Length: 412
Image 1: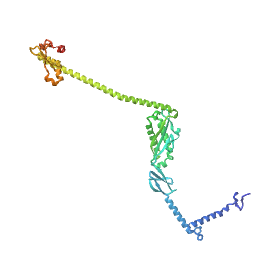
Image 2: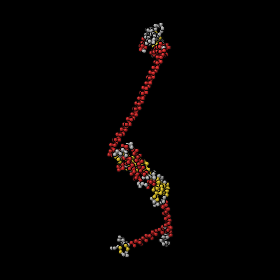
Image 3: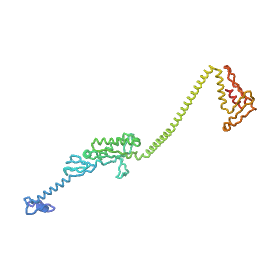
Image 4: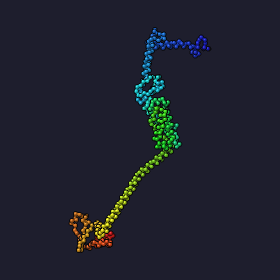
């Protein structure tokens, strides 16, 4: 059955109604809304104007508009917490940055404000993932980010943690679409560049600090060139190790290197202990030798000088000099004996004083007897005949106790 019939209007094939049937329902809805507004703002049915609204209705609408305007204006107040900056925009265009405290801007949709925490320490992880408590997730390693090639064509697994904070809120919001993702890509690029120019041994051992400093410098330079408003505060090398397949071999190599260094240190310590002692002993020997040398030279020079002086005196007075030499020699030979022999002129006995006993008992020295020794033949010491052409001889001593001294004097 056709629904587009002349004079009947267009009918809906599903409901059976024509388009003209909706007009009374729309008028009824408008009238119902008008009555509700009149009830809210004190309107009545008798004083309608030409538009269907009373004077009280217009007054109520004005008050409603004023209230809405006041609420809209109050919505522009906002508070910026300590450590945050507020970035205000008007229809998306930057107009200023506000500091901590109470601030106001034209309410939305005219102006908007974005709060940025400039004191918060943010961080990104490159080469590994961890949860909030610091535990590694799924073993921690992300091979796509961690594995890279070194200068000596070895693979190394490097994991970095980068801490940063916002130094310019405006640049942080407007200049880079995704600052965290950009920083991560820049970190990976800088990391591969620095590691690729270093050897594996340098990365795994003494080069860690230098590598971290170089990576941080590269990251900051690139982010500054983007004017990203990001300040990199620290770069931490979480781990640097060879791939898992060869870790045991590298561990053995590192242990051998540590043993080598330990033995070198022990040898150096032993050398530091022995060498100074040897040098001290050598210096002491040298000083002793120098002292002995100086002593011998001084003694020889003194003897030579004394002999020269004696020769001069002997040349002047040979007899006197020879006699003096003889007396001095006898004094030196007989000076250490404890026996005293007294020659009595024209006597047949020799007096003997036991000085050794007197020295042992000095309190009895005053009462010590003098012993006559008749059995000892008289010992006479005759003065030699001094002649410059006759060698010096010592007269014989007949005392039996002085035979050893006599032989000594003959030898002299």
